[in-house]
Image (cartoon, rainbow, N blue to C red; front, top):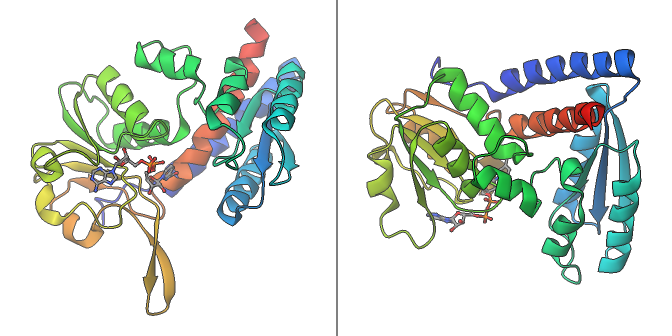
Length: 288
Ligand code: NAD
């Protein structure tokens, strides 16, 4: 369908451009953009994410350094590692794969990463920059990828009514702030919202980031709206299991002007934006 927003193709183009720019930075300035990825423990889903981030970094012509701490590592051990990576001038980006085990305070970890190396954009200083509308910080990768896909079908968002479903610090909240900066009138809905559908029915743009398979139904969508599906939900089927989004895709497709599929929509953009943030972190050391 020509309504489909092909995140996989968009991300592949972005990664190719990043690869060229990374190569130029290395050739002209001797800077090899480097991402340090830290994982604590053995969570299988986290291991998959870490492997794909490492592979994508290397495919983009950048360097990755992976650090794996055991599941019983202390917060102090992790903070010591982060301090060493902060102090290492050959490391431009630092990412700690979440979630961290319960003996480690997540906020203490995020606060410890140097803001200029915080390529996930989760440090409170970068969250604050985004919140006050400054453009000099790192923006979280998933909402950044959503915005790129959205602008690929609607270059000017000014005046659009946008509804974001979900208000997490990783997706919903920064997404709403980005859309507001683009000139949208933004409504954020969450678990306490009384009637999410009443909000989405008025929306020109719907961003679904609740983590609830098939939440957004056909009759939630105004004809001609653009629908961005961030959800990644594993559901059981007769053949085993598969990944679906937060949008009941078959129902919504006839109403929407454009829609991202799952998989192949937002997912591939997240890693591409991580690479872009890493490239920017490396480039910024030139002017520092
Ligand atoms: P989260 O659990 O931290 O936050 C979910 C948010 O949605 C909360 O604010 C909650 O109040 C709200 N919510 C939950 N159920 C709702 C409902 N029925 N109606 C309205 N609001 C509801 O999750 P998250 O980290 O923000 O991730 C959201 C989804 O996006 C998950 O499916 C996750 O797997 C996916 N995700 C995808 C990518 C990607 O690269 N595509 C990246 C991050 C997260």
